[in-house]
Length: 105
Image 1 (cartoon, helix red, strand yellow):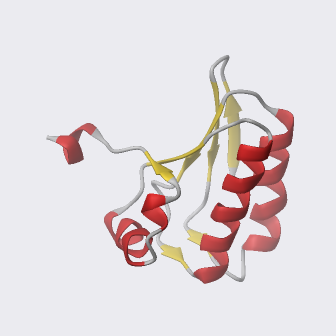
Image 2 (cartoon, one colour):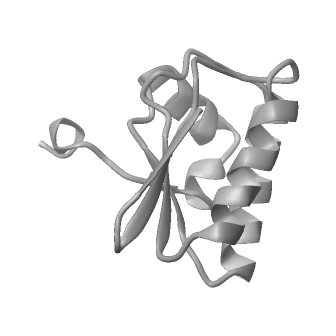
Image 3 (cartoon, helix red, strand yellow):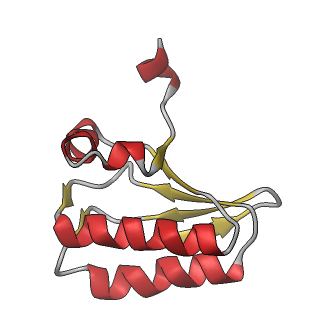
C-alpha cells in the first residue's frame, strides 16, 4: 500500500488482496490516511484481485471514519470483478466509486 498527497486530495493504493489475511496491515494505514490528511481520500483499487467480506468491512469503516472527519472516500480504478461484488452487496450505493471515462462512454 502506498500513500501520496496533493493539495486537494490524498491517494492511497491498495495491493492485490484486501481480505482477512491483509486487513490487519491495511486498516491502520487507511485510518491514518484519513486522520492525517485533508480533502478527498482516493483509494486506488486498480491492482485489486481479491476482496472478501472483511475487506469490504474495512472500506465501509474507512468511509465512516472519513465522513466523521468531514472528508470523502472515493474508490478509483475498481476492477469489474470487484465492482460486481460492490453491486451485489449494494455497497456501490453507499461508497463513492469513480467511473473511468471508458465506463462512461
